[in-house]
Amino acid sequence: MANASAPKTVLIAPDKFKGSLTASEVADALAGGLRSVGAIRCELLPLADGGDGSVDAAVASAFARHAFVVPGPTGQPAQASIAFDGVTAVVEVANTCGLGLLPDGRLLPLDASSRGFGEAVLFALSFRPARIVLALGGSASTDGGMGMLTALGYRFLDASGRSLEGNGRNLGLVHSVVVDALPGLIGVELLVASDVHNPLSGPDGAPAVFGPQKGASVQDVSALDAGLTHFVSMLTSGGFESAASLAEHPGAGSAGGIGFACMLLGASQVSGADYFLDLLDFDARKEGCDLVVTGEGSIDEQTLAGKLPAAVARRSGTRPIIAVAGRSLLQRERWSEMSLSHIYTLADYTDLDSSKDPVLSAELLRRIGRDIGEGLE
Image (cartoon, rainbow, N blue to C red):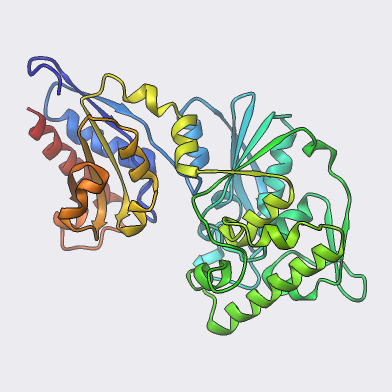
C-alpha cells in the first residue's frame, strides 16, 4: 500500500449488477461512499464482458455513442445504440434484441428474433469501421442468428418459396437459402466478444442450457434443438460447407446461436472479459492504484470460471483486491483463488431483496464504499 500520509487511490472496476444497476451506477455509488471517508482518490472504470453494458462501457472510455432504432426481439421498435471511436465499433445484443426489450417482460422463446442485432451491424457498417466487436449476451432469442442473417442479406425460404422471418419457430421450416452478398462486410474485422463456450445444439447447446432462462418449456427446448439441427443442414446444402463444424465449435451457442451466425460470417472469437479490459486500458489504469475494487451481481462458481471479476483479479498483480456483489455463493476459503482480501455483499447489509431495487442497491453500495474507505485509513 502507499505511504500512510499520502492519499490512497482506489480503482473501482465493476461489472453491472444485472437487473438493478449498470456498471457506471455501481462505480458511482461505491465512489460516493469511499470519498465520504476522507482523502481517497477514486478512479472509475465501469466494465463489461461482452454482455449487456458493453456499449455503455465503451462510451465511458471515450467512444462516441450513436443512437438509432431497430426492431426489437418481437419486432416492435426499440431504441438502441452502438459505440464508435473512428476505428472500432461496438455492437451489443442486449440493447438490440435482448431480454430487457421484451414487451412487459413476457418471454417468447420461439418467436423472439435476432434481427435487430443484424440491423445494428448494418448501422455500424455505415461508419466504415475497420473492426466491429460483436458483444453477445442477454439475448431473448434462440434462432441460431437467423434473424441477424436476414438483416444482412440472407433469405430463408420455405417449401413454397416464401421468405421466412428469422425466429426459433421458423428454423425447422427453412427449405432453401439465398444469399445476396453484403459488400460492406468485406475487409471488416469481426470479433465475437463472449466467454460462453457452448456448441449450437445438443445436450450442452443453446436451447438445452440457456433456453429455460428465456422461457422455453421442455417441448420448446426439443423443438428449438431440432430446428437448429435442421437449420445447419439447410445451410450446408446451400453451400456453406463449414456450417456443421462451426455449429460444434465452442461459443457457437452463445446468445441463442448468434455466435454460430457470426462465425458463419467469418468472425473470430475473443474472451469478452479480457477484450474489454484491453479496450478500456485496464492495465494502464491500475498503475498507481493502492487498491482495486471489482464486482458483479452474483459471485459464484461461474465467476471463478473466468467471468469479469476473475479477469480483473488475475490482471491486478500484487495490489490488494476487494470484490463487491449482491450476493456471494463462494466460501471464504475459496476467496484466495481470486486473490481476494474480502467480498462485501449487499445481502450482508439488508434482509430485503435488493436485486431489483436500484435505489436500495445504490444506498447499500455507498455504505460498503464507506466501510472499505474506513479500512484504508
